[in-house]
Image (tube, rainbow, N blue to C red; front, top):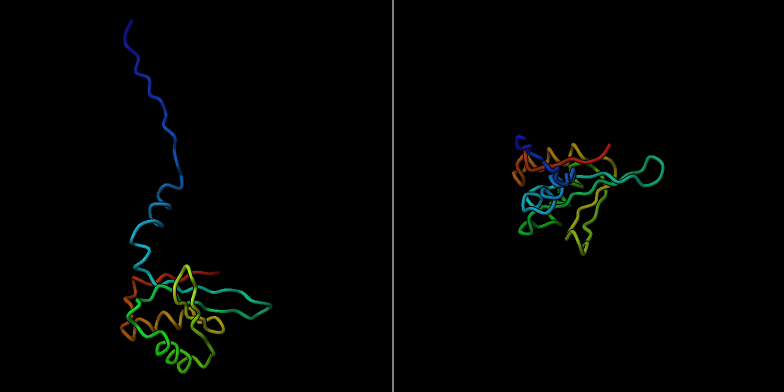
Length: 113
């Protein structure tokens, strides 16, 4: 009889790529702009992942003046400093950060809806 090659299937992990991306240094390079739904039509825009060398309060002051909205800088133990703005300001914030030269366009991730 001839030899039969038996191929044993290995365990396939469909989330291996996603876990590799999350654990790597690449996720630290991005600035994440998210929206959080509050109640009814009210929402918050959060910006996280900016470099620590930037003055968050100065950026916040310019964002508030530019978009006529209120905001604050929140210290999160896991994420560091996070900028919160009232309303859906995702597109506005991303264009502002690119035009001000704070972040390159391909380093911004916009999340939500």
